[in-house]
Image 1 (cartoon, rainbow, N blue to C red):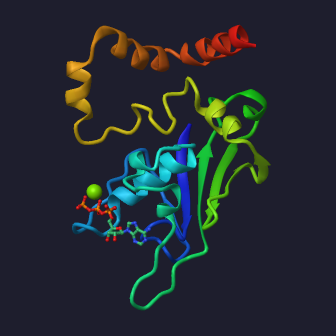
Image 2: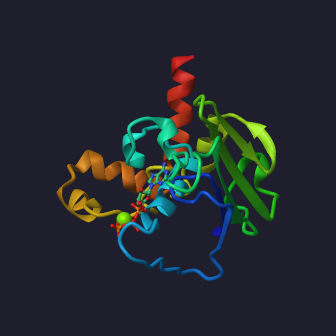
Image 3: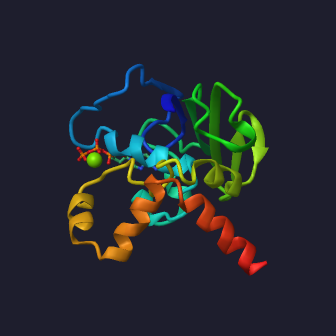
Length: 183
Ligand code: ATP
Ligand code: MG
């Protein structure tokens, strides 16, 4: 499974539709302070279902929409689409047979969020389910930010266990069991 490309529109500083290709297994994003490097990471977290504005360095969920500049009016909506190579079928469930999977989210100024899987409208839940146990996801260890290594080193055993269970693919089943128990 590999992130092949990403389309951003109206998201934070990416007001113009922007297509970013990730042609190899390693990509570095470089640029001066404030040019939007971290916004790219925020976009990845957001489309995978991040629902905390604070984690996206904002105050409200609509803060991710381009809020205008001297020369441009604010955007009406923000949208991100990720394209994953899924030839190995690691993104599973009903979608395992698809060689490519696209995940899309958009939000309007009214705060209405919509999610799409391969172009079909779906729930946030379907997106978080898709990534559960794959090591990817809005809060996953696949995204290592400043301070995370220190947090891992200082983590209590039960906190560390959460990371290990995700890496082992166990968290998907634990989540299912929890749901069955509460039904
Ligand atoms: P650094 O090297 O300092 O970490 P960076 O490249 O990671 O910088 P970002 O934090 O990604 O920079 O981008 C910050 C820029 O994004 C700021 O110029 C900020 O004004 C802009 N920005 C954030 N949210 C919005 C928004 N909703 N509308 C327009 N611009 C925004
Ligand atoms: Mg940054």
